[in-house]
Image 1: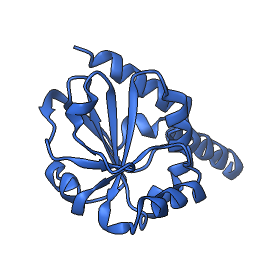
Image 2: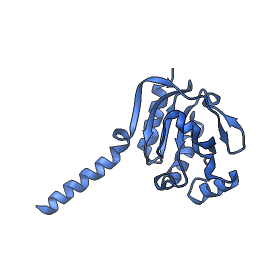
Image 3: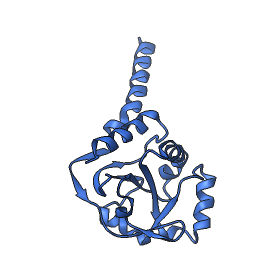
Image 4: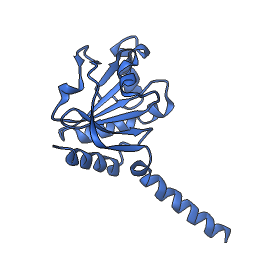
Length: 177
């Protein structure tokens, strides 16, 4: 009887883990919100705003090099980035500017942890995260093609999971006005 109970519990946990992305940590708003207009910096040094990405569905992924879950998901973010390339879905990987001495340091860090392809951006002093009211990481803000915030994902995700990619693609289609 104990073995049967253990198998049922294990199966339940496996199923729960598979759907946890869709049920936990995701908050889709009833109405879009204006995204902050504060600029952030591309790895090239170019200053950008979310309005510069109008027409694309943007995942603004706030992370930190000192955040274990953030670092662990970098490899899956790299896969997600490559899988979404050319599909109108843009990944904006944002970390606080004070964590890095240079763009080369950040580039080496991302390569070391499996995300060599993802373009990276810095948030000057963490002010953009503050404008969004984000004080923990990882935290992903979903921005529709009109530059409006439509929801958030709190915590980590298995970004390379086909179900996650499908979920994001469906959000993009649903929020195209």
